Amino acid sequence: GVVSKLKETNTGDTLSDEAHPIIFEKVKFAEPIISYAIAPKSKGDEEKVSTGIHRMLEEDPTIKFHRDEETKEMILSGMGQVHLEVALERLKRKFGVEVVMKTPKIPYRETIRASSDAQGRYKKQSGGRGQYGDCRIKIEPRPRGKGFEFVDNIVGGSIPRQYIPAVEKGIVDAMHEGIIAGYPMVDVKVTLYDGSYHTVDSSEMAFKIAGSLGIKKAVENAKPILLEPVMKVEITTPDEALGAVIGDLNSKRGKVQGVESQARNQKITALVPMSEMLTYANQLHSLTSGRGLYSMEFSHYEEVPSHQAQKIIADKAAQKKEKAEEK
Image 1 (tube, rainbow, N blue to C red):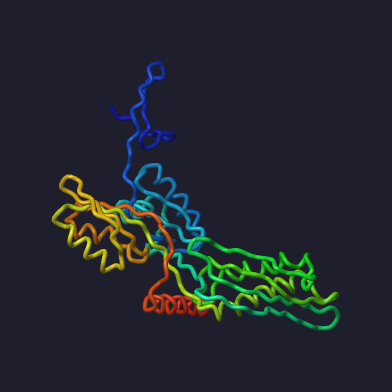
Image 2 (tube, one colour):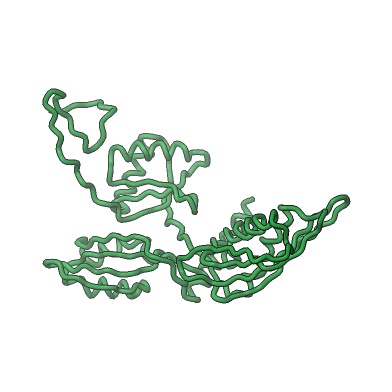
């Protein structure tokens, strides 16, 4: 039979007599294979988009949705481009909101390759009490994935204890936006080893600014580089498409880690930059006549080759200029 207008049920629920409950095993849905950033065509429609998408998720569990905390983009994932286009058409029809699909932004990072010393000194006098903060720091690269480390090596009271957290705060805040292309800085050790203060004019704010100035100067002389996220990718392909798939991975700067036979298929494990995988679902479909499958997860960050880095930096500068002109 058919039951209609059930507001409290979702896909995969079992309906049965309360006195004789029957619970079927939940259906296991395939994981999404393609993701796009979406944005409303009309400003101010973000809430309507979010509400509509969450209603659709209840109807179609193969769609996934989240907001990227770093890029602030709304990310919609599904089983293919056509699948997502149909979902967005439904969103327009049922909720009266139109969106555009865009390629998601890549969460690049910045770091350093060399050590460097610098002084961060902030002095301001404008009648009455002034502002004064002065710090000397050394920065060093850390192993990939080890994050930020701050070392307090102040001896003899050259900077009073109450101002040291402010120096660290200024450094950390400045590292949210690197000097190459404005991406967050990672894997850096900063040692605060000297400085000076003024008994009247020094303040937490002055030392915070001094810390920020110091880290920016130090990074300039520490051979800053751009890092990109690398994904661990697992691909299942028919035997006859193996060569084409591996050749394509090589063209994407991928590194094949292993190939394993599975009946008439081959399972490839590879490490590939995220930027090369954004439209991979369509490419794999073409290479394998629709019989290939893949999954991927974040692995680690790696230095971007110089020719690629130049393009990324130029693109980011153009975006920044465009935003400034809009204002």
